[in-house]
Image 1 (spheres, one colour):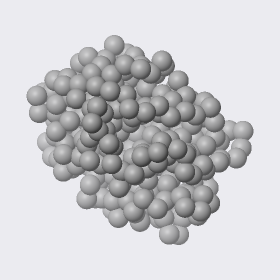
Image 2 (cartoon, rainbow, N blue to C red):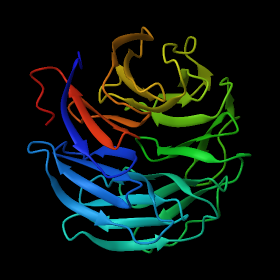
Image 3 (cartoon, rainbow, N blue to C red):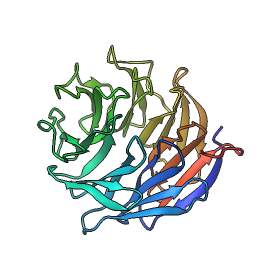
Image 4 (tube, rainbow, N blue to C red):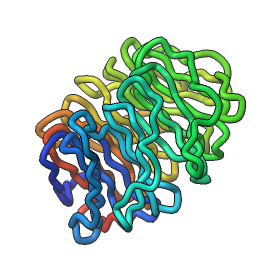
Length: 306
């Protein structure tokens, strides 16, 4: 399972984030080379190149809209930009307000809202149509917000922070739901909702991954152990039965979320830290980005990644 590296795609600098389009036909990658690149999964060619201007505009994060027609990117200059993929033009932003680098961005499931998390310790919810912030900044973390995600029903947000906690938030009231989730012993680097919205996964610089029950806000089992350095990114498979993780140890691992054991990997090939991982929508492939300037697509020998 996921034993083969099928393709290697290249940037001119660190790859900071990757994402599959909802239909699985394209991959988005962003980089410190100030570009967002859209790749065709069949030809492995760049079909769109979105360029960000500014000496401090290194792109930190990218995500597709639910319909796959737009992308949103976050930058180290604290801005959020919405792109039309076909025209390669900016249709929203730059959205300004954060006082630190934007570390993570995500569309709501209906595509009407965005959430951004920043090194200024806040999260902001944005209206995609008006490009205005909805309500006030979400406060509560005591250090950088490193990762944010919407729940599948769009009613909740999850956040991870360098304050070693995970937060769950009500989108409408913009209040924290329950208590901060604690258990990691170092910064949280990545958070993700399971496809059914009943569980969360968090990765940490403490080298572990934890799976949480959203309702009880308790961990399911013990921490997932195996990486030799900090975990940088986690993502569920479309059926929720698997989890992929990337690490500073240059490897990826595939986990069974019920047994909480490694079922794939370590996947070797990157020559520097893995920064971002994702499953394809059909669950047949995994994509990873790395500081080695590459995007790698992994799968079985017969996988087509579509």
